[in-house]
Image (cartoon, rainbow, N blue to C red):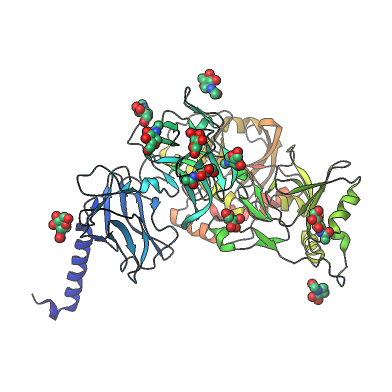
Length: 613
Ligand SMILES: *[C@@H]1O[C@H](CO)[C@@H](O)[C@H](O)[C@H]1NC(C)=O
Ligand SMILES: *[C@@H]1O[C@H](CO)[C@@H](O)[C@H](O)[C@H]1NC(C)=O
Ligand SMILES: *[C@@H]1O[C@H](CO)[C@@H](O)[C@H](O)[C@H]1NC(C)=O
Ligand SMILES: *[C@@H]1O[C@H](CO)[C@@H](O)[C@H](O)[C@H]1NC(C)=O
Ligand SMILES: *[C@@H]1O[C@H](CO)[C@@H](O)[C@H](O)[C@H]1NC(C)=O
Ligand SMILES: *[C@@H]1O[C@H](CO)[C@@H](O)[C@H](O)[C@H]1NC(C)=O
Ligand SMILES: *[C@@H]1O[C@H](CO)[C@@H](O)[C@H](O)[C@H]1NC(C)=O
Ligand SMILES: *[C@@H]1O[C@H](CO)[C@@H](O)[C@H](O)[C@H]1NC(C)=O
Ligand SMILES: *[C@@H]1O[C@H](CO)[C@@H](O)[C@H](O)[C@H]1NC(C)=O
Ligand SMILES: *[C@@H]1O[C@H](CO)[C@@H](O)[C@H](O)[C@H]1NC(C)=O
């Protein structure tokens, strides 16, 4: 057969050759001096695979769990974190002068192991070990490593690797978060060993500000004094070594078949992940610090952190995201900026000076508080008003006047009855404030604004409940009875933080609404009745029972979700949990007094729910 006469066949043959070449040349775990890695070629060892991967058009060399172990793309190490290349097919990774070097499309080295080598490069080889450690050794029988990726970790800590501090060279081996969920460049958060000799882990912001400590390691009881969850001694076997040369933590898994690494997340928490099966998303065993809002400056300047609403970061009213693109990738550190600039010190715009502060309740603000001694709220206000760089004040009782200069940092919204909550007055342009107040309209909308938590997050919960329900309906297994509320995890591995949604027992629901009695009924929407009930801790709740008939297919459901995703201005009351038992799908909402309740439950959300169900 003459391939020249058949261009199509020739093309297929070439493709096949390329494919075979790329797959065959590296069935091994080693790159020798006469080999190079390019395009889709990988080296494989144990549970790991090393090669090029792509994120939004940027290409990196890295290591990931092989698809056999974790089917989702799970990167555990990145070589050229800060120096992506634009085309993996014209870039190569190879041994050059005793180093592993990455050459970009212009044949310029962009990343290297940077050894001042004394060995002849002909025998030097790079080997991916079963542990996921990429090592460089002088020759194939050498047991000494010239260089190893475990000494240069990215955001993942694999079993056998060390988080270390070298007391001789002052060098550290630390985990650094990614910049955002799509960019492996080093972010602001890192996990380190406390160099001060306290035998603990610390989390640092920008390598400088400590915002969490594990507490010191107690070698006799194998426990960190402040973070008992890290013990979990049926999974991890920690060890801590400290001497005059330095100190390090390392760990192994009691069951080496378990897939459970540590990761420093984009959101500034250290997390233990676990995969139970390759195809299912990972679960988060624990995240530390426990409070996401305890992560230093997680929401940036003029951003406000909310632990409870389902949306972690929001801009303060009158502010907008500085970089919506970064926010969408879970990097909130850029914070927010004013929608309307202050006209401070501009004598031509004196209108409405008395409206220059927006009152916000149940807030806390951890950074840069200045205490001023004045005797009244009016004086406190005027001190702030008369200083153009003053952006907020708070006045509690006599002589307790606080002002903030410049950017507002570490702002947190607390729940209404939180003892740590205080009322902040935030300086806004008069026109912005008028705009906000006009926007509020009649008084009845206020609870609605409070309830305007992320529609997306609430929807996720509903969708989660829905899927769980469908699954159970499918299985029709005998249900375990649940009496109180059990917490279940969802969302792990989806990029968003693991949030807990309580799953209520049907029995406790039936009790509180007298077995769906008419007396407890608030009304009926197009797709199911709503009841009022009282749950644990005397919390008033609205209970929505979804009708049993739900003949929709999976595809229609997904289409409708897409539609909902496009409806941006939606709002729902806070969803407290759901109950999925015996063919019932019941959603439990916070009860809102006033008319807003039926507006929400029969109005907007019913519209959304009708779309879903
Ligand atoms: C590459 O080098 C190794 C030893 O360094 C040698 O055994 C092997 O035959 C070489 N392969 C090719 C294709 O030259
Ligand atoms: C390491 O740091 C200590 C204290 O900060 C300093 O005294 C010492 O000289 C440093 N050593 C090196 C090798 O930089
Ligand atoms: C270590 O101690 C020094 C001085 O005692 C202190 O300045 C520094 O902040 C400490 N570092 C950490 C990370 O605690
Ligand atoms: C982090 O620290 C460096 C100096 O160590 C500083 O230049 C940089 O601006 C800091 N980054 C942020 C976001 O504050
Ligand atoms: C370490 O743990 C043991 C046993 O729980 C306890 O008796 C001891 O006081 C602890 N040591 C420190 C320094 O906390
Ligand atoms: C735990 O780790 C230590 C140090 O690496 C090791 O000596 C010990 O055998 C391990 N224990 C188990 C049960 O694997
Ligand atoms: C680290 O080295 C310094 C001298 O450079 C020494 O004074 C200190 O005790 C060492 N730290 C530990 C934990 O041994
Ligand atoms: C510390 O390092 C020195 C020099 O490398 C070595 O001789 C010594 O044994 C080390 N000490 C410990 C406790 O490992
Ligand atoms: C002062 O305010 C006026 C009217 O709002 C505006 O035109 C002018 O640019 C402002 N001047 C400064 C210095 O901000
Ligand atoms: C505003 O207050 C800060 C802090 O008290 C002070 O440093 C600054 O000089 C003041 N600015 C003016 C214009 O008064």
